[in-house]
Image 1 (tube, rainbow, N blue to C red):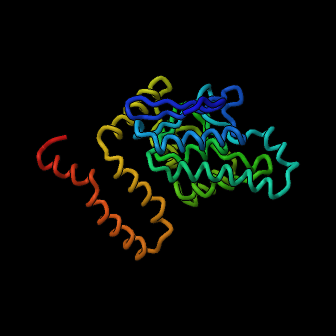
Image 2: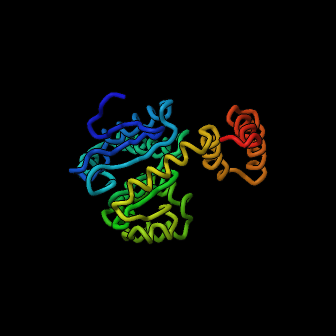
Image 3: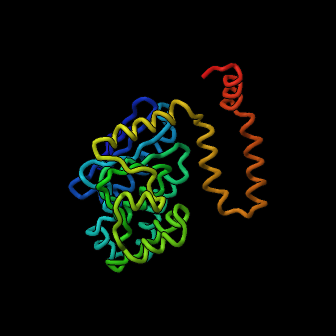
Length: 257
């Protein structure tokens, strides 16, 4: 992958690491950062060397959300121009949420507004103990529009209202209690924790199975009970014919890894 200005991409031991690299702006999101993230995730989707993805960030903050100076510039735009910019961000969040590979967020610092949203669309998230989370959009007259769609799915209406309407910041243990992050660890243990978890997924799980399961989780929630069960039965039948399933069952019966 070609070198980018604000995003780094590397692969080691079947794990691709996509790193936000705009620390002087607390990794705030503008059009170029979003474009580079979309390009990195698209590259990772077809990268045969990568089975799992880690989303990381350089510097003290994970992501401060939208670049406010950039948003101020956009206030001069037409509605159509602002809609195009909003769709640009929407596409990134949807791309991560429906990505064919598991995405793990390594949250080494504060994740605010769109930064919290970025963490929420990842499949797993591990946070440093000092990290803060929150959706502060209502405090500046903005709305947490796109991030809301995913947060409601992740933690439900009651907890989402508490965060989205108050604009309050919460600490990492509170974020874990609400279901926003999977685990909270000391800062000096975060890299090892994320690396070990990513390696476990890469080494022990079927890439085909993780892809299909993730796809089902994203789609089945919008279906009726009968539609969901029909869809599940179809996916079950398809899974039995995959190479990974056939090999996995044979190896298990033969007591092989």
